[in-house]
Amino acid sequence: MGRLIARYLEQRAWRGHVLYLGSAEETRQVAKDHGSSANSCLIAVGGDGTVRQVAAGIIESGGVSSLGVLPSGGGNDFYRMTGMPTVATEALDALRHACPQRCDYGRVAWRQGESVRRMIFMNAAGVGLDAAVAGRAASLRLPGLLRYMVATIVELMRWRPAAAEIRFDSEPASRHMRLLFAYAANGKYGGGGFKLAPRASARDGMLDVCLVGNLSLSRALVLFPRAILGTHESAPEVRIVRAALVELLPNTPMPLHVDGDLLTNRVPRYESRSSRAAYRYSWPHRERLHARRRQETGEWVKNIRTPYLGASIQLHFYTRSTWQNGFTSLTMSQSSASSL
Image (cartoon, rainbow, N blue to C red; front, top):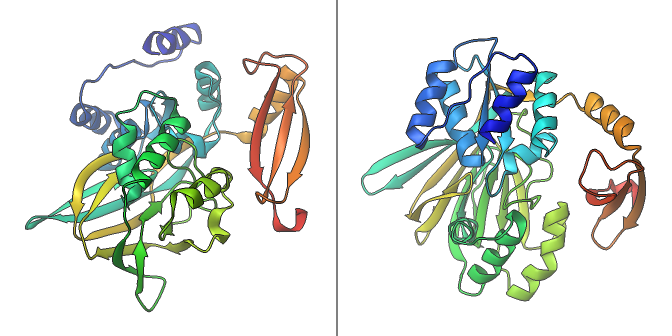
């Protein structure tokens, strides 16, 4: 990937450098050292964890430089939210014409022993089964979404929900429930492609908190396709609450993950909040991307309704297969209620 980027920069006479960094702390420090220029874009090449470290450095330097992303990690859920092309050279082209805009990030705090630890997150932070799945998925050598599905099935067979109290700044009273997991989302996607928070936005100053109660393995298998499409909110075991601050007090300690990285297996108290418009992200110019794709591929789309899943299936056909590695592709997107 580094050689491809260097060749791209050379061919287009861009001023830039490719840096190979060995640790999270080094990545964060380099981003902090180079994040104070308003005319620069720091491109994170990696997964959600790498994006978090680069963004943390930019934020610590004052949030002046813009952040760009090229995905090469396991989940890449933050990148998926932005709608950028998946081919590296096309993503770099999109970054050239991107529109830097102020975006939010999340902050999580948890008690560990007698101290309180804090960390930022770009995409999501979660406790419970969600965190156990993240830890399990890290040990599996499978493609993104499949890896998280296998990890979820394995963990569901042994996981038991815990009683918890959940407090939101958007609600006057606390909620009490048996909780399988709580997922505080700044972005729409999690687990390598599950649309766990379908209405989440990184530009509204709010978190979308997905609460999931007790689920059997058979019930989870039924909800899998709906979670991929983002139509699971109507399930009785699921609640999604929008808030700027959420506090969780489980009866028994639960594991915690931040952007897919398992941090600890025992969290007795957890708090997550949104920080509004704290850095600039290079969002793609979508109209240009779509126009270019139609011009290069001769794309046409056929919509097929699937009321059972609460979504429509879009079949994309290409008369010239230059944009993607194949003649046809299958994508699924949520339909509006009026169209079903």
